[in-house]
Picture 1 (cartoon, rainbow, N blue to C red):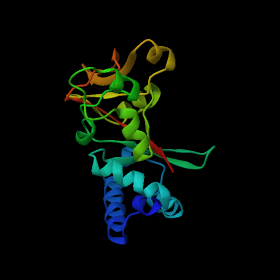
Picture 2 (tube, helix red, strand yellow; picture 1 turned 90 degrees about the horizontal axis):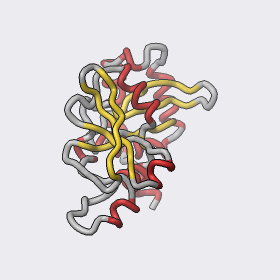
Picture 3 (cartoon, rainbow, N blue to C red; picture 1 turned 60 degrees about the horizontal axis):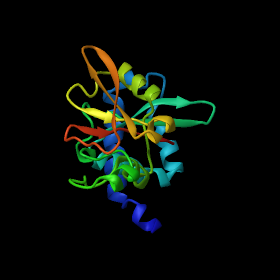
Length: 187
């Protein structure tokens, strides 16, 4: 099973090149961070490379958005302009998926994120992302939902309209072609 989550040397090299180009092109997201430091960290945490590749394969365009000095981790967010294309039309979680009687979506965001080895952005992380550019101007993204809201059947999503970040609620079993999810990975 572990070998299934390993990239070939060619895949690894291709991904590293994509990440480096994106890193250099978007310096505003990580002004005080050096690529060589990020690359060193990636090389010493190869188990996380597979997750970054999954983020990339599903249209997330992962990029470094910060460094946590307390945990010595680089923080990657999905930085695609719109919600990642290959992660749309999912309801929020397994409970919501199982509760749907008809017209079930193919999957749910919580199971997909877990399988990818990432977590959903929190509201705070989503708001931080929006400080780095204008994301989700035509789409929306599910975000981590507090348990009190989820227990009542709801889930949160967010988007950027009218130069404002909006946080909304919906039934957790809902799904839309223009709603996906963004992930975070700490390395």
